[in-house]
Image (cartoon, rainbow, N blue to C red; front, side, top):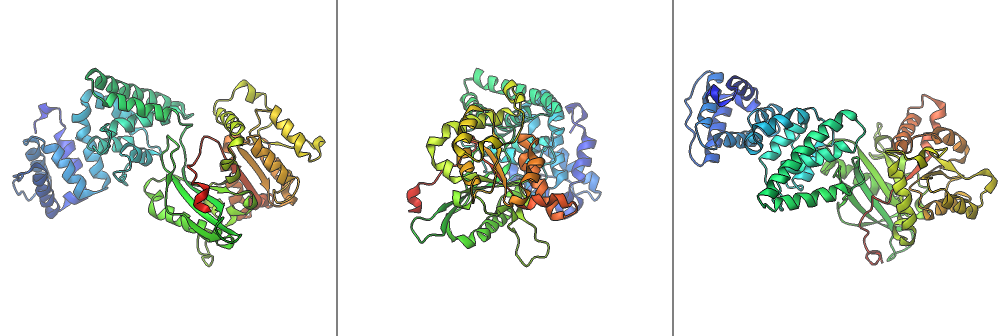
Amino acid sequence: MREDDGVDTVALTNALGRVGVMRTAEGRAALIEAVGKQLGAALIVADLSLPTAHIFAILNACADRAGGMNALIRALTMLAGDDAEAVRFCGLLGPAETLVGTADENRLREPLERCAIPEIPRLFNVAVEGMVRPPAALHNAWDAFVRLADTNVRADGVPPHLVFVDLLATLLRSGDDPSFQAQAGVLRAWATEQIGTYRAKKNPIAERMERLRARFAGSAGPGFPMSLIILLEQDLRGAPGRYVVTHWRQTDPVRWSPEPAGDERVVELQEIPGAIAALLRGAERDWAGRFGGPLNLELFLPSELMNLDVDQWLGDAVDDPTAVPIGTEYEVVLRSQQRLRESGWHRSWNMRSQVLHAHRAPSELLRNSQKTVHRCPPEFDGDARKLRLHLNSRTEVVAYLLSSPPDREPGRSELIVAFRTGLPAVLWSRDPAVHDELWEAVENEPILGLPAAVKAMRTAAELGIDPAARIGRHISLVWDPYYRPIDLPPLSASM
């Protein structure tokens, strides 16, 4: 390596020396052998006793061979795995430099290094179509970009690092943080230029990338949470009280695209809490951990199960002295299996869900709405027909507090009216004695903050520091926007 190559040899030598595998003579020998295998011919390096001198010699030998530096990166990645220092070394002299050029790298590196949002592993997963496990040592978006620049696993041939940058720009643009908007602009402009270059060369990657953009633009961001989604439906083949359990996982932070996550199973009513706990443990063990960030639980329940205290169930063994309700560890929300199946209710559901989504940038209509959460006007005296007429005339209403739990009137009829008129957010206290306290707690709560606020109230109730927090043990929340569907199994599968 020569200084006039524009390479900081001291920085490279020091960076490579900090990688754990490079600290022993055996590790360095293994790297030399692995690089030779990548090149198809042995890499000749003098066997020097001083580690720094040996590492410098390895770098020189790689630089003198065509493709040697890329071979070094691939070999180091194989040997060092997720070693954070290995990732940083690859960032100093990685495939990003050769694939996108120094000028482009100078544009991208600073905004990508500044971006350390928790969604990065999930964006990585989308960019490689799940074909490569996200490395554990992704400290920021630049680390991910460097890894992806040397990866070509997509079936459509689109470079994963280009998909990643464009996805990241989409996610940052849809958020509220002003500092992210400038970063998003730089990233989006670069991705657009890359697409233009492909188009000028009549490369089909340009059209494929535009199609991907269109798909992502149609999602209702900003950023979907990682979710375990569970559907319970009556098993029409067996005796009453048996339910079919189907589940999906949502990991894409930009586009709502739940994936089936396992086989159906049939359980008795009393077995449902254990089945839910087992699915949560499986999610934590098998797929959620690799992405980081919070995991939410969404439960599609039939009407007869809507008042179950799901959020109070335990995710751990009942004899675990540290076990806590799942509603304190996850945002646990309910969704309506009945409305999902009843397509005649979907027009109003779609319409109000668009209003819910508009709360991200409030319109004049929403600013004129007096309350975030609404309840039945007292003059209606529990008349569900009047409530339906009232809600039909108030299209800005998207969240409603039932007058009672839905296992009794008027809450039972109000819940049906809420679903028929398309309300995406409904909540109630399972204990009528604290209904008024719940109303005071949520009546002015920002609508999009309801799931997090309810989780906080559930946690406060368990801590028991404030007696008024007792309401948290009794809150059920339906959070059911139309734009977050699942592919329903046919009813015949349960018959």
